[in-house]
Length: 313
Image 1 (cartoon, helix red, strand yellow):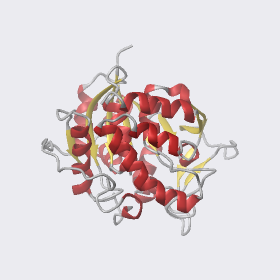
Image 2 (cartoon, one colour):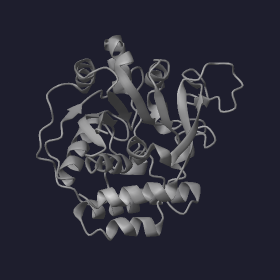
Image 3 (cartoon, helix red, strand yellow):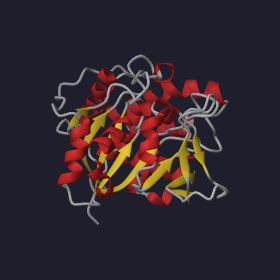
C-alpha cells in the first residue's frame, strides 16, 4: 500500500517534536506533504522555528514548513511554557534552523493542497489548537469533503481536563475552532487524554531512546526528561504522557488503538467548562456520532514502534 499523504499541523512542544520525528522516519507509511505551524504551546514565532529545528534534527531539511495563525479565532492566546519551557523545546540545546520558512500562509497551503490532491487522499494531523484547520474550513468550505480524515490530539472524557478542571489544553486554547472542526462532517479520529495518559514514558522507555546513540535519540530522551517532571509532579504518575505521537502512530499502526464512534460536542459558553469535549461515551444524548473517540492503546507496541523508527534517524 502506498504511503498516506498527510499534513501535520502543530505547535511544537516536545511531544509534537516526537510525533514529527516519527512521521519523518516512516516514509513507507507516511508521505508528509508539509508541516503547518500554529500558536499554542508557545507563540507562533517559536512554533514555526521549532518545526524547522525538528526537521533538521531528522535530516529532512527539504520538508516544507508554513506559518499559520498567531492567535485563536476569537480569543486571546493561552500558552503552556509552564510545561514546555520558554522555547517550547526546552531540554537539549538546539541550534537555530537554517532551512527556510515557506512564504505561503499555512491556511492557504492546507486549502491549495486539498484542492490539488485527489479528493479523499489527504489526512490532516493536528497536534495543537485547531485554529489553522478551522480557518481553512471557513475560508474554503469546499475542502471539507475532500479530506480523507482528520486524526487529532485533543480533548478528554474520563481524564477530564489538564488546563482547567474540565478542558484539555488544545481544545481550550481555541474552542470555537474545535467547534467548527467537530461540526464539519469530516471523518474524525480523536486521541484524547484518556489514551495519551496510558502512553507514559518510563525510565526504561526513555533510556531506550538514549541508548540509540544518535542525535535524535538523545534529543527525544532529553525532551522527555524535561517535561516528564511536570506531569509526574501533577499526576503522581511514573512518567509523562507522550500525547502527540499517538496521532502519527495511529496513521502508521491503527491497530494499536481502540475506541468508540460517538458524538462529541465542544463547550464554547460554559463558565466552568469552556473547552470541554462533551463526549457521549454511553450514547445517552441521542445525537448522531461524529468522531471515533479513542479509549485505549497498546502502550508496549506504541513505544516499540517509536523506538524502532527514531533509531532510523
